Length: 198
Image (cartoon, rainbow, N blue to C red; front, side, top):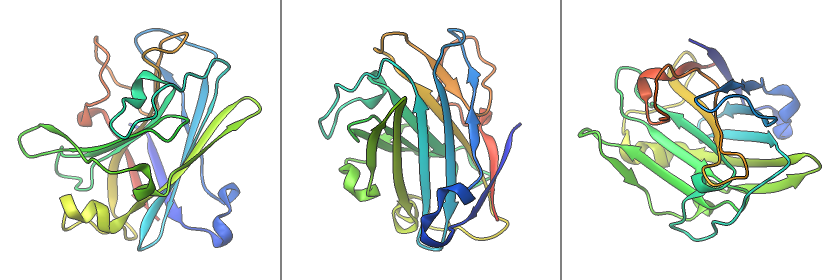
């Protein structure tokens, strides 16, 4: 199992001071030339997430509020607010900030939270060799579904970071923490790695 420390938000939101998690487990379909990373930091109000992808053939067709970003080039962050529960929140964004925001409930149903990406203050931009997305996960938003959640030093947060593109030129599945299953699936909280608040 991989481990990652979620450091406190640096002054002036200096991402160079935030540890990088490599998203480099190429799953089910073999390796591609796509490389990805994730970074997360926090304060009492939110977690702050930055994810990057270096890829040549970026697909960005989905634009609607209820679109499916996973069909496009997509970067995803899944996390379990309670370490002892398999319930989780999943956040998926494409280069247009088309977003899937949802959670898994007590009955193992996936529930979509129908909010615009502005709830996360999400911003995406193209780079010379790919794209990057930055957003914040408000503590108050998580607490709507997980009332006892609080980002604080020493708290553990099982999580995984993903990159996919179901209809991209070359379909791919990439994860930070490896998933040992025969069939493709990201909604597998038992295969999350472990993050911990500094």
